[in-house]
Amino acid sequence: KAGVTQTPRYLIKTRGQQVTLSCSPISGHRSVSWYQQTPGQGLQFLFEYFSETQRNKGNFPGRFSGRQFSNSRSEMNVSTLELGDSALYLCASSSLPVGEGTQYFGPGTRLTVL
Amino acid sequence: AQTVTQSQPEMSVQEAETVTLSCTYDTSESDYYLFWYKQPPSRQMILVIRQEAYKQQNATENRFSVNFQKAAKSFSLKISDSQLGDAAMYFCAYRRHQAGTALIFGKGTTLSVSS
Image (cartoon, rainbow over all chains, first blue to last red; front, top):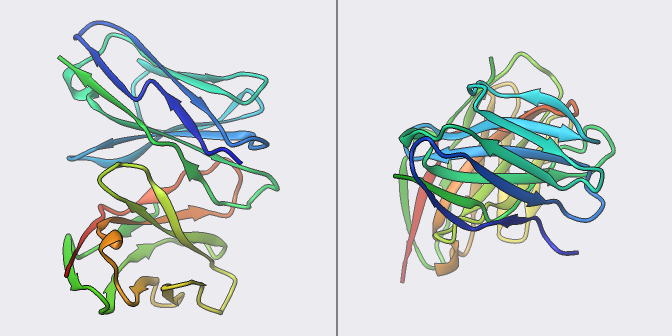
């Protein structure tokens, strides 16, 4: 099976702009989660989607949003970028049944905000 | 709130030797999962091993094994016969046994392997 894919791999934006990151889960996986990784804060949970519904959300401002499509692909959007949004954004997918618990990660998107 | 603590920011080991990475966690839940993930310089997060809290038996995957002490809330990773390719950042993570819940990560341990 192909793994989790994320596009683009690298992105450079300026403050105030917005950005959209994409994630395609492993075939058959219906749950997609997003994490932000920074040297200072480590790995922090952004949100989780299942069947196009957001089931869980981390403690991030409303500038961070996401969605999931019927084919389970997910996008996350960050509006009005700030310097502190520079990070590695990781997407992870997992399969049912409920509670299986293992998430498999993509290679990440490195976002740099100038 | 659940927390995961990795008290060793850096560890080093020689090739073919054994190293143990420590992890403790705090939770009031009785049913959960614990994981070790490896993140090499490529930044791809790779699952190393997983443990279900209800299982008494320690998980093993080839050269990787864990020592799961539920009462002590301890979950250490032992790497045997270390190889150069084991050099990476290792993250311990916790997840409640409920759909939609997030992984909670420790701060990570950087493992270096010397020949």
